[in-house]
Length: 154
Image (cartoon, rainbow, N blue to C red; front, top):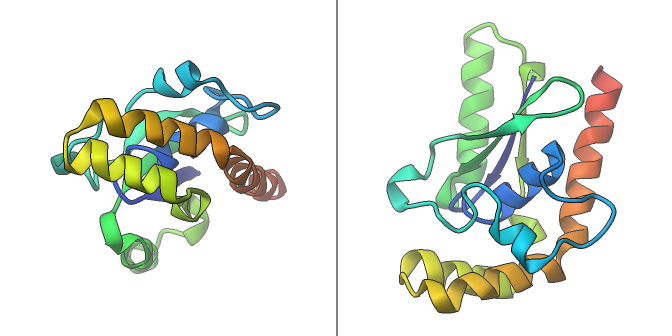
């Protein structure tokens, strides 16, 4: 199965959730500032990379895990992928799409906009990390629910 965490710009929430899922971030404590900053693709995605899946690793159930940005079209993209799979005769159970944007708060949104859109990285990036740390339990909840579902399917 493919597990794809989806957010606005594939720079923050999908990267964090996918990283927890594959063990790049802890699931038993809040990560440090530096642990978050050291993640592959964290706060580095350029506009032309949105929509391109970033491979984040493989989980304990042998599922490939990705992070994808879809801007405001997350729900439409998810519907299109499911529809494409159905039309192609591929079961919906071959891919799991998870919207991670609800996990973040205003601090990460403002930091992300400052860093990625306005290119004021030295100001925006720290705000994104502090926002992620503040809402980290939301990410743990999302990933734990996904893993419970995957365990049932295994």
